[in-house]
Length: 291
Image (cartoon, rainbow, N blue to C red; front, side):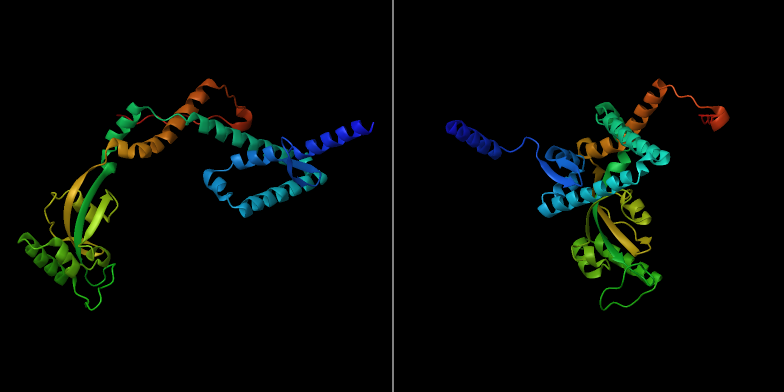
């Protein structure tokens, strides 16, 4: 008998050392939340939220928030608020919304076809155009940039005169970078020889943008007036990004269109009827514009 008892005690001790397959990690009132349930909650979060949980304090904070949520939901049931028809309807609609969003995400999971992306790329090629260049800015009174230290305010006419004179020096062979360092009122680029790096079409103010994407490459522009002053622009290179460079952008741009098409396809297969006595008649479709 003593031997059997010892065996049972040893077995119990060994069993106690084996962790439960799905241990309870928190309780709220009488409600137990297991590890698998909490892991599922974490899995439902977005990538940024998941990454933040690497900090144990953040994970504990999430658990406390869930605990308070559960606590308030339990209190709502004690108060029989869950019996309210309006609240039940709201819960159902919220659940339906989550399911609808999940269905939409599934519909747009597959990437657009290569042919569709190539067609989009060609149709929007101007959007991928970039220019690389430099500028020298000559501000005048009222410009949107402050004057450089030690420089006095000058009139618009004087700024144009100075810009024209600098352009003549450039055409005669002076270094654009050196003159930008000494003459440009754009102190940020001026210190780097007027270098603006690469910029997309539409990234600059309208007047600058129009000139930067039309003037010949390697030729100093005429003075271009903007709200900042007069610009002398030198475009060093210009061209569209390659398809592979913007593939991700095109895919993101096409996904809403693919989603809309998928929804319309589903609507065409789904029978919906509406009581016109309650909802009224459907509005007449808008006629397509003449080609």
